[in-house]
Image (cartoon, rainbow over all chains, first blue to last red; front, side, top):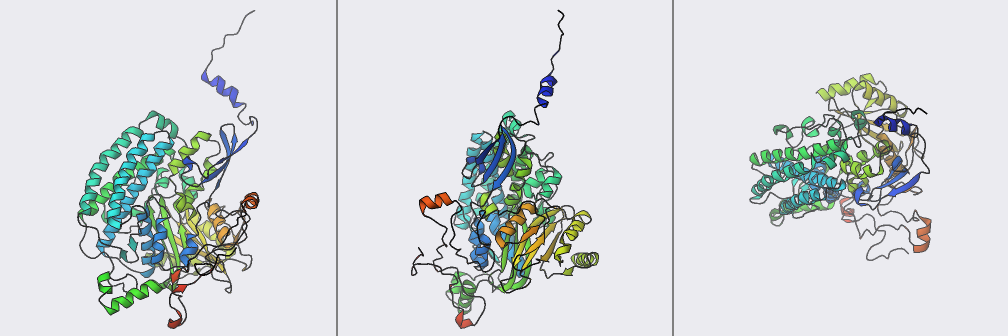
Length: 413
Length: 205
């Protein structure tokens, strides 16, 4: 009996399995991922519907860290709320402090002196480095590259020491006040920042060398969790996530604040919008932040670190409070009634490490906001999960979550 | 100057819109039934493609209209902001048209506003709570809701039965510490505005 000779190609298997693709293979399984799970970076819970290893639907459950920050803000004076902003994106508290202070200053129509702006700018960029170091490090760990985390955390530790010297606290800095910062930079601090940057460059290069062309890392992240340009805009992506999808928006350049228009820096865009691009954008932004901080150190102006003429907003120096009647009264009024603001509405957004952090303030005058809304980038980034996760493998979930670089303190507020 | 002309342009384009007081970006107030139409024109014809924020303001129990929703649109091309405000239709059961058909991000933002204020969005595909749990009876960001919170049952009945626990108001310890913003100077010395329980007054059982 003659037998047919069939030459096998890779397409044969694909064609055969294509027939099964739409069919459900057995039962689906509901899997709770989180709220306590190392890959969910905090207390995010994903209700996943699985067909074998494939995700068919995803319902993120958030709110486990909901503290009612907006309600709290309505019940305290503007300065009292500064420590609460630390606890939004607790990986970059300095950037939150600055953003909040600038929103309130915009309400007051207050201009802070150049030295204060430059200090704040250095704070923002160091916070960005700190947040991205963690973002990249933890992301590497999510993909199985444990050592990256240790390298980047060593650098963050050094940053925390610098923050401690500047603000008095390592983690929850509460550095800004409405109309200034709480104290001037310490003697020799800028030099130490410069020393830190000098050794940070090689450390980032090391991470770059370990991850960027690492076969395993590329296999796990390339073309995983692709968010197109249109989707990125539609789902309110901001910051590095938006730029990784190829949308050219950087508020530091487009809506300059803190004098960013006087600094040279680049904007990095991704080409595909996958998890790998989001990693690349963060990596390069760190190098960029280093450049900005160096420029800021070079041009650090002299002068005061608070707006001296803002008598009803910024508390006078302690030495004056204890020796002068007028300053004592001023301090008393500030503590009891808060910095006095005009009526009106403002919305201020700043380019924070996780994306665009926004504060919407409706004031009816006086020292307490009538309504304060926090627009958090992590909240918006997470809203894309039900859209992109279905169809993916279960093992890709940590990769996508890691690449979105969210923080639940900010998401839940 | 350019912002002024932009605002004039907006007011001319949307005849039903009125100017809204704002200290920064151009802001307009539109009737609730024109909200979606306005946002569609802003998105399609004027390039405001990113809904950065959508929220609401509660003006208090006596006010009417009681709730105003605020949306902030950003243009990724022109890098401009615009604020659209719209009063909700009913004071007791406030409703407003949903922006989800235009901006998918509105899904979560509006769920949050519903969760916090009880504003129902007409046409929203998934009107569930998002930060609080499903079945929570209050809307925390309404002005009459106390800062300390209100005693409630736990969301999981089985756990509540075994542990005999419930959600109780937070210990305010005499806070928040600031003077009332209105009234005579002599009445305004600092005191806790909300003292549901503290060192002197025992925690309710």
